[in-house]
Amino acid sequence: MSGYERFAKWLLPLGVVGALVMGLIWPGPGESLGEIELGPLDVTAITVIIIFLVSGVALRGARVQRESLSRAIVVVLLLNLIVAPLMAGAFLAIVPLASGLAFGIAAMASVPTTLSSAAVLTQVAGGDRVWGATLTVLCVFTGALTAPIAVSLLLRTEATIPTGSLLLRLILLVLVPLGVGYGLARLTSWQVNRVWRVVPSLGVVVLAWITVSESAESIQATPGGQLLVVGALVIGAHVVMLFLARIAALSLPRDRAVAVFFVTAQKTLPLALTVISAVAVLVPELSAVASQAVIVAVMWHFVQTLVDGTIAARWGKDVVH
Image: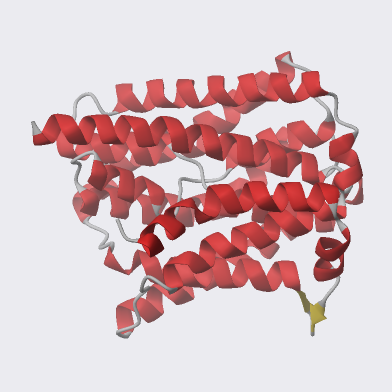
């Protein structure tokens, strides 16, 4: 692995941690960056558009196949987009959390699978990468539409979220750039090279920095015990998702079962941060605690990255042997 590949691999996790630390100890620069506007768009909106435009181009290798629209896609959509939010709702009903932490759980549980990691993990584990990419495309495009509804329902006791406005905002900021990028890549020779590949990760770091900086005081006021509870909930939620994904993949051939497993179990951090930012704009009472939601999303991301990466490496070694 080259030095640049190592940099690209660790940019997202280490960059997000750095953004959280910077936003907490020196929030001024992040707050100032978040106040910049270019016409009708602020820096946050522009960053989101760039993230998903480039991510759409990165999906160019995925060719949707008819056979993938049968049982596999039904299982993936059911578990990732419906069961996961229902599970989060059950957790939140049982365990009382501060509104910001509940916000983060709701956002992460509602978004679809990762834009690239699930397909990469599928390949590492010796699975069918075409199936992994196909399921990812279908899940991401569907999840961008269902996430606003799920978040609104999960947070109905915390605040009244204008679902229509949130859906429209996500369509304009996420679905349109994602579709444009995907379409351009299929119609032209534009590809995401190793330089472009880090752009979405950089964008996520910027989003985390701005969001945490704008409400650093709410994080500092969060009891440590609450964060420990959220950590346990995040770990438990991902373990349950892994269990469900494993069951869903049992009757499939190994290579396709691996694809179903990882696409089902993963959740995308970029879209979760986009949802958090969009809700913060539309709902003032949740804007003040958005940074707490970011902390939860980052915790969830780290758990799934560590656990799923380990599983993929182990399964990949089994294939080699």
